[in-house]
Image (cartoon, rainbow, N blue to C red):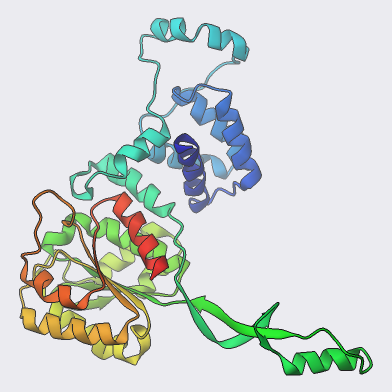
Length: 358
């Protein structure tokens, strides 16, 4: 199951890269891999290229996505293969004759290792792979009760629809119609600390915010010495263009931290007017506060009165020896619903579940 998840995740990354591989192509890809050696890079490459690509324009996108997902060098072209039974019978000997180990860590193994690693300690290649994995996330928006009602099989009797059904039947009794309140996506607000102490995590968190903003109604702001709203920039479909635009819009990247002042600006400009009302608000910060911690506590209390839920995500939570001793965290704890870790892909996936359940 873990290996299958890795292959399906690669197909999702391809779709986000612009390759139109639908469910039928993905099933064909998985079936092809089952009859090949997943430890051979060439097998994985050609199985995907022959089943997932549908037109010439897909080939360069496939090559780039494959290299980012699986890593390593460009695979070589292979000649016509021997029958499967012959290959299986000579698999061990062939690996020794090739002069290589004959094995490639499968996609699922790579993902399993990477999902738990601290983002701050990743290499450049691992960060590129992490970007693909974040892009493959599929956030599910939290739901709230809508004000309007809709047709339903049970619920409150709908007199007007029942009467219209009787008139359509010539005045004869008709089956009662019902209505009930539906649901609609709940707003999400992401406040991302981009100060110097959070800079190792900022790129991954902005990529995460881009994925969330593409899936649900979302407001995104960065926190530093000032507040910067980047919702419009992160709304662009292309992730690299969106992140470049957001980076240009943030004037205080890797600067200081004034959480109380910046959250107050957010509430005064957008939060009080509706952005934070009944929303799930997520604050990404390690809690290092250069300003007045009392002001931060006051503004979080104000935010908590407006929001449906307030979640604080700290990349150091859960690490060995961590204790909430920072002034910002101490001021924030009485006013947040949950304090979560946020240092790895696995913790970001857990955060998506918490947002959906809020």
